[in-house]
Amino acid sequence: MEKLIAIVPTETYQEPSITGQVKWTSKYNLALWLRVPEVLNNRVRLVLKYRDAKGIHSVLVDKAKVARNVVLLSNLVKVTAHGAINYMGVFLYFGSISFEYTVDELFAQRKLTIKHTPVKPLYNHNK
Image 1: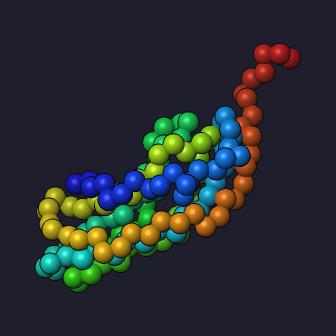
Image 2: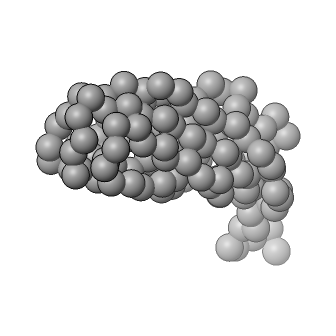
Image 3: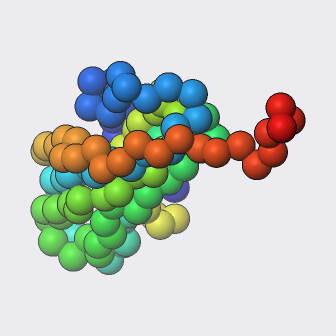
């Protein structure tokens, strides 16, 4: 099952210098503190989804087994995009067993924009 936890604010991922089909990479520090009323042996995954010029992409942030009442899912993830990112969301995936939970805190921060490389055309009809 998939559950949208939050839409990431645009100022977190927007890069004004990106135009057209430029391929670029950035890193994001993500953390989610999840509280559950009862301990279940269910697995959860935290996933970052984003949309760029080539479509929707998913990056696994972290996964854990709900073996305690508080679960921390966190990681530094790398996102490679083509052109501007126009949507980013944080999703929680869990097994077929639905359960109650509370999000104590969600943290999303861009740490670094790594590189900008123009995408070269495969064929130039002007030559």
